[in-house]
Image (cartoon, rainbow, N blue to C red; front, side, top):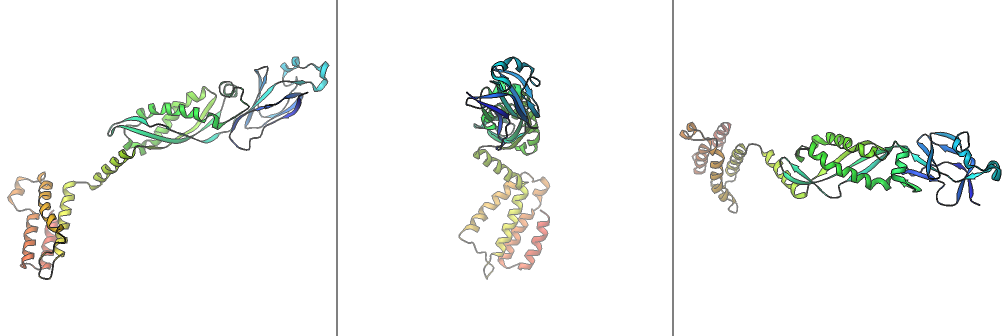
Length: 328
């Protein structure tokens, strides 16, 4: 004869079990008058003949006619007496919040960027869910499984999230360059988008976070180069500054007779290149009035020539150079 279960309860030490069936695999029957204990974080769905008879909330329940009126017709007391057994199943539903569930895009999502054009994005994050409809969740997801954990449903939920994410990205994000300021709005929009799909299987999504959105390495390199150019600022002003610093370095790099020493031809090469660079940098800012008078750069070159010839002392050159630099 099958063993009789007198106490039905379930404690989850792992924190990952969503649904547990009692009795589990094996020949076991529930004793008439057995005690059913349901915790505050649980619900117990009672099955008989493949159908849900009742759903028990938190508390201690005796499985007898007083608590389950429909059970009376199943018990043949004349054959078994007060300990009459009956075949049924109880599914313990864990109603706690299942946190730190991870999601991510297995394949990149093609995204039309307003500035970078078409780019492929990968995204990762976490979310939390909770069972709100025990009957629906058991019938739609669990079925006849004896044990169901959050790992069992993780892949299914990830697929729902990723399928909605591409639409949310297109509607919320215009460019990955604006991504840091759009994380919160993107997370909120994605949560709203997937909420209905989760409710259709008896779940509610408690929170949803997009932790990162990444682009391919070659696109990231382009973004870094672009930010580097932006950091330089005005190119004309930058070239003027470099020219002035080069002249100052050349003035300091002299031998005992005052003649300029060119190390390994580098200074000579820069001397040929610098006039062209300055000419290009100044082309866009030259005015008719400026062409009539010598520019500060021309005067600096003249002063440098006088310094090399020994006409000016180093102190006189530094003094006049400072005044000319103030005009730039």
